[in-house]
View 1 (cartoon, rainbow, N blue to C red):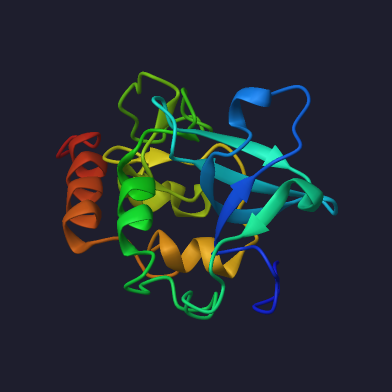
View 2: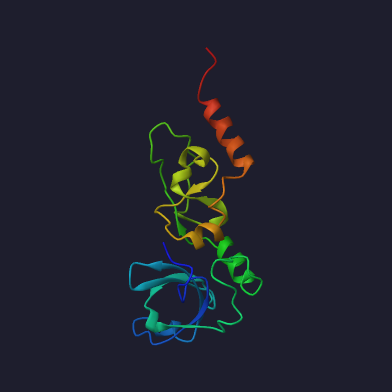
Length: 172
């Protein structure tokens, strides 16, 4: 889990000094999570095709940190447009097949989805039929809050899941 005092998570950054991807030098992105002990996951949104990439701190410079709200406030007005775009773009890896036999499941394609249509794998029995399930775990409380995964699924998702579970049982 990333500490709230982390100097990068939740902030917009400028990218520089990349050798393998010089096309990203000078581009701007949003740091969404720490990746291991020496890298950060950056959503690069200032390119024609937005992408996420793992970068070292030496390649990141926080843009106007005084204008940014504390990292614990994902709804900050200064960052809201970037967060909204990040929530709607399909970039998260999701499960392509049911992880448990007998689980209500609708085949998903492609194998990436937007955070707005995805839930953590821990919600598997609550939303497996009507939402994508994240292929991986999230340890960042910032990311959980940003995508609304710190709250229970919407009632409509739960109702759709219950209806599908109910339809698999015959009235005997």
